[in-house]
Image (cartoon, rainbow, N blue to C red; front, side, top):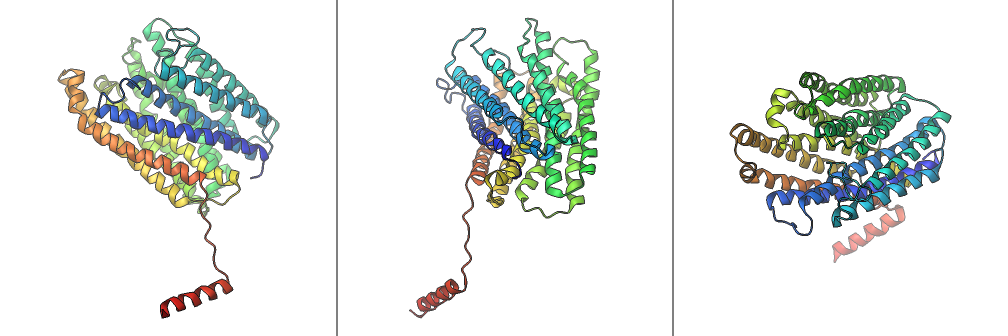
Length: 465
């Protein structure tokens, strides 16, 4: 590790992995509720478990992004982070806000209170005091990293990363806009939800992936940076107006059906470019980097993001198809594989790469780490297929035949049972990853000549007996 302030990333990664464990555990609980609708009804209602599942996902991914920034920016700018104290203060605010959210959701505190109670908007349920804390933490972060970049060396990786992080923070301000008109509410709501995951987060993803390719493959920086600028331009070109695929049925003008269909179809392109970029860099570099696990997660990230966000997103993005499929399990299939491929795998890739440096060790427990990749990825892919089939059946029975929602749900139980089984694999894979990262591999000591002679003598003695 070259810079002492990179140690900041360690604290962020540890908190992120703790929330990762919470997220997948809540996901498993939700999966079983789909099988047995009365499970934990009185203790943990479905809506509360779902809020904990989605909110912990968003927070741990953001913490992973922040940790990645604190790790890679010193190397890219060739200087220490502007203020380590501010970085730890930012983390403390996030931890306090997360604790406040969990307590508020679980015990349903301050219901209806403007400042302290939770809001009813999906993914943005956080109380306003927590939202305000997130803004303060984001401002601290942006000041800290921007001052570091401005004072140090500028690279394409830091430029695109900062653009994504600034965009992420500014778009979150729309979380405070909550009009009484439902169509307007949804328009502004998607400014956060869509323009995060299909806009600014893609820039963060591209820059972190470029950093990993630079370190793992040894390809010239000039080549990596050219790819990075192309991918960032494609992501913004398609992603901004691609927001229109959420405006089909919320009361907005009809022209959004064409704008949304055309530009969201193009959203496949940056993900295909990212996948091509990753594999071309590995092929061109031909470098035998010792951290095979980080390379596997990086390639898995690019590949599964293309299929989850690109292919599965395209499956139901055209307005003629979306008219029947929106809000079904097809949406859930796309969401799970897209988030896992694009952002979960990315964070686990940078954690796999950075932790050996932060701990001062060689890459360790790589076999377990790579096993966790295949276990988790296999589970999420199987889950995606089961939800896709469930959504196809649901679309036909509910939207075409006109059967009642709950009657249709009863007929999907076999898919939900299979989805729960895949969820078990994901949770086991997540726990295996955390173990592989945190617990050092036991060193195998090779015996010297004297010890070897003694061992051979003992073996001969045992054989004689």
